[in-house]
Length: 339
Image 1 (tube, rainbow, N blue to C red):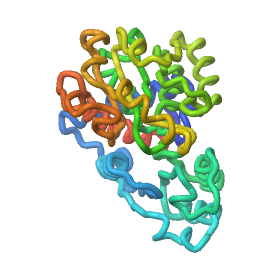
Image 2: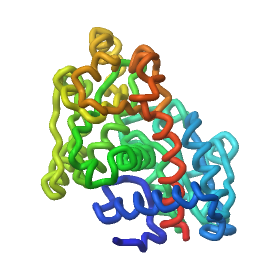
Image 3: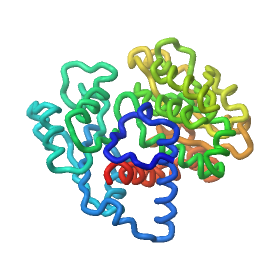
Image 4: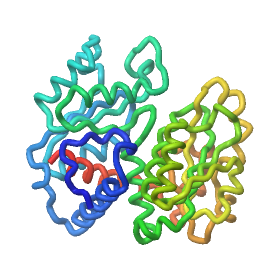
């Protein structure tokens, strides 16, 4: 197990190999067990200061990071761009150099520069370029809390949840995990499915990616698909693509639903016709495995992405377990890279 990740940025799961991702998950499990018995953890990052920049709304990410750094003995400073000189067009380079003088770690949530940062134009990948740019000029670890390509902390928490439900990573590797598109009126980022197929394939999971057959609309970034296929070959996992949600749901052990689309205008035109079939319900679980579970990164658009009855069903839905595990995974990441 590779345990020395000090000083590393946590921006993309593509930057980490199987052993390193397993280390994060092992440490998260250990920290969660210490929490369970009330064992103090405040010595781990005692006196460390984490800066948290939220350029987009957040509930679970914000609460879990603020709670996590405090439990580890550190403290958090929370900002939005309007509170910093970024609002007066100070460069990201100058901002990065300054945060390095005052902080021990910096986390950023940013995925739409035009809406969130007042940029004149926005192209897919611009937010990732900003996060990479900050990391280039900062000499402290930078953590990606969400950008336009990935949601890495979310997916690591999701995989920790699967480990718990299936009795460890080795057992999770024997399960069929369906990462499914679901309908919402908004055209959201594909960061969650892209991170899932990349991290899951690296760790040897068997993933079925399911979405409607609308070329160029719901397809994922080829960088992530190509990476996942190669990683699955090396790890013993698999990645398959299915355009029929009912076929994808057959014998599934996990149905993880999330909306995404690449083109807002085209999505507004054609997305509605898939709403009924792709709104995950108990009907999908009738063809799934006996003890299958439902997952979602939250917030879920009820009765669009998932029915009320399913997401509130305690025998199937494990969405709140996922949310809690964000805390433990992020504590592991901070403990490993900020110590």
